[in-house]
Image (tube, rainbow, N blue to C red; front, side, top):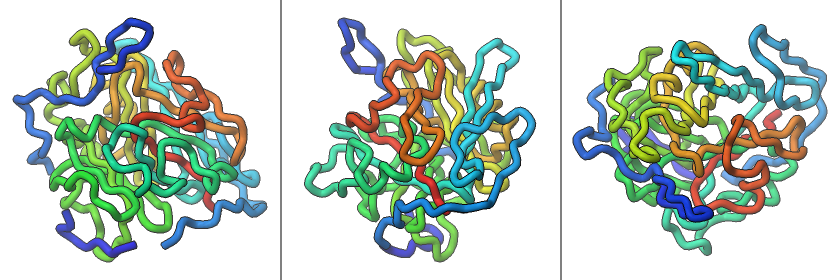
Length: 309
């Protein structure tokens, strides 16, 4: 582990169909915006603490009677429906995984709980898992895994930052993240911020700024990740959405910062379990990938959500 201080720096062929992998970004748009320990034990002890269900939110995962994950569907003015999952900061911790092919890192150097399949130490505490961002070859940002920088981190880029204790934050690298003394172990960057200070990106209507889409369409499968003022992470995704749909859904559910993750049908996927280590269920209506994809193993990076008490 190391301490990081301020200023630390689809083409998938499936059954004959060609999907545009979200691995490229419009060359006319800069990806650097001007805007402004050992793994914790996976043992889940009992608890009598409860978390009150909030209006509009449906409990998804509980840990000892407390809500760890909840969800809601947000219908945007254009008719697109975005599914939102909220991971409660007090109940969840996070881990970044490398896929079998991306990022390109030798399997022998990746720990069992950071590789292309959910690890044995994670399984008993697993409550959810979701996709990462664009291919690392896209130039959309850096990638750090278990304190090893695989792709150099870029200042000004939207970032998911995971600390040594498993807590996570979404923000802008070198503009508030990392905080002084923060023990960062993993970072997943992707594009300019989708949401910053509770406001959508000035480039939100520029479809090309948010990746190459299947058939060149604007409304495609898209995913995103944000953070609210309580420190909860919010995953928002749809199999039919434009960038503004994601930003709007994040903001309407409390998000003040946000980043786009992967896009296009083969890559957008989330699975959740009702209790730690329980059977996973696909979370995004119409998603292509099965609920056990991250257990079987996956080609691309992803994030696991683990019970934390």
